[in-house]
Image (cartoon, rainbow, N blue to C red; front, side, top):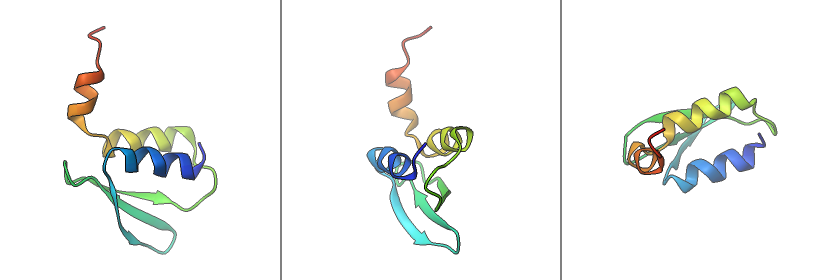
Length: 69
């Protein structure tokens, strides 16, 4: 996944940039209080991108999107 797409996705959840680290940027979801590092590579492996999205996603939105099966 391209980094800009990942950042656009998590910012769509309402996540904000907390700080720039040495090799990562830290984003936080103010609703849940969860923070996660996002590497500054052009391409981020899909497995890692899914993990970051899962951690920073809003659980209320995921429950509303669940179709029950």
